[in-house]
Length: 169
Image (cartoon, rainbow, N blue to C red; front, side):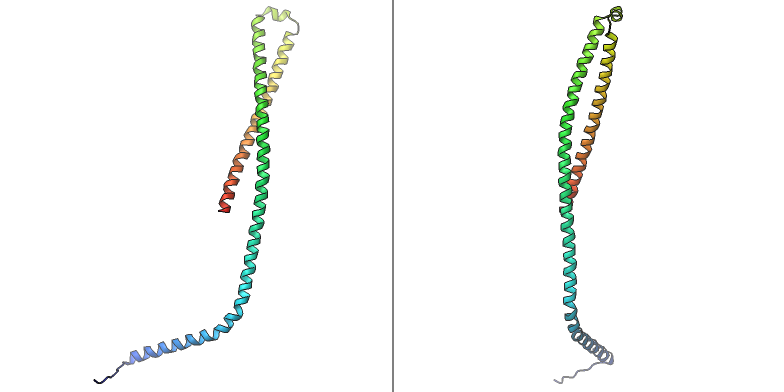
C-alpha cells in the first residue's frame, strides 16, 4: 500500500493563502494584546465615571420627583379640605335660599295685590330678599367653580402618580 498524496495547484494555492491569513491573524493578535491591556483601565475608568454621572442624575431626578409628588399631595389635601368646606357652605346657602324663596312665596300668597301696596317696606323686603338670593347664587357658582378646580387637580395628581409608577417601573 503505497501512500501517495497528490494535490493540485489550486489546492496548494488555497492552503498557502490559508496559512498566510492564519499567520497574519496570529501576528496582529499578539501585537495588539499589550495595547489592549494599556487602554483597558482608561476605558474602564471612563465607563465608571459615566456610570456614576448617570447614577447621580438618576438619584437627583428621583429626589426632585419625590419632592414634587409630596408638594402635590399637600396641595391635593388642601384642595380636598377646601372642597369639603365649600360644599358645606354651598349646602347651607341652598338651604337659606330655599327658606327665603318659601318666605317670598308665603308673602305673595298672604298679600294678593292691594295689601302689598298698603304695607310699608314690603317692596324693600322683596328687593332685599332678591338681592340676597342673587348674592347666594353668585357664591354657589363660585363654590361650584372651585369644586371643578379641585377635580382638575385631582385628575392631574392621578396622572402624576401614573407617570411616577411608570418611571419607577
